[in-house]
Length: 104
Image (cartoon, rainbow, N blue to C red; front, side, top):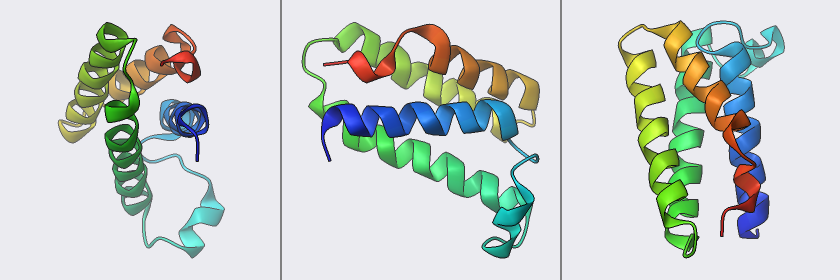
């Protein structure tokens, strides 16, 4: 999968988190996960894994990449602290900040 495709997946994940986290994921997902919390944990894991695959491939937009990395950690920390509105806000900002799929 290309860098652009991975970045697109990351953007999609951030949009999902912005709209659904931590406890408003689609009900059909409960066929695969025991609770909304388990769905949320998997989404956060997906974001972390995607970013860990993407980050080493970004060679030009290093400042933007560093910013995205900091904001992803802030988002995760907010959710971990139960600050769900703040976590969603950060996810939304990342998805809307600039087109992440253009990072190089």
